[in-house]
Length: 188
Image 1 (tube, rainbow, N blue to C red):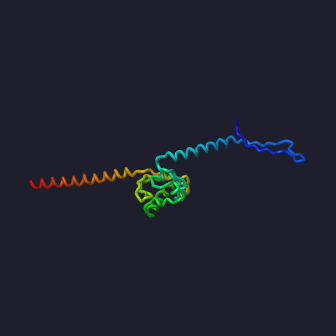
Image 2 (image 1 turned 60 degrees about the vertical axis):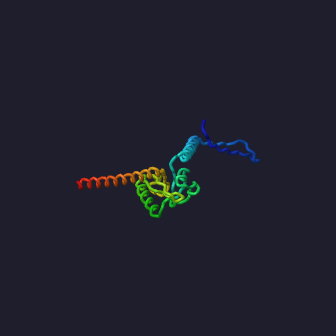
Image 3 (image 1 turned 180 degrees about the vertical axis):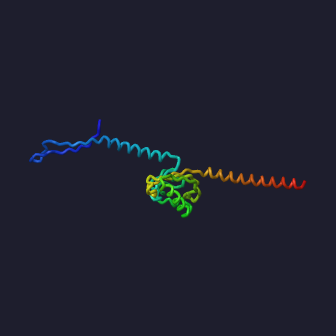
């Protein structure tokens, strides 16, 4: 079996009635198979976006062109609230927005990817610590066609903070113990 695109022309007599037909056919099997593959890949992409436990967004000049629900949910938004808008609201300041863009685009211009840990601003103003990665599908102009992936590491950061506090308490206790031992040995 194969697919064809057919055009059929009637040949008319003097009275304008068809006497016979001419058919021109072109084999379009390869184009049809390619379109089926493109459709399959598009469906696969949509399912990957839907099922991914991490936030995934496409950007064009730091504006959201596509994003999955996980991305919006992590930041406390609905997809519709972010779609088409700037990424600026997810940063705490213009300076952070500028710095992260400068750092990312520098790496992307060299054809690489950029990864960093950073706090992002949720819709309610709270902090969401993420590890994020960015790559550009057009390194010659990384402001276009950029993929942005975020993963929540807030629990990890909270644990780091608790460990830092515990280490500080432990070090203070060690200093106090050492001072006490020094005082006891000095008094002997």
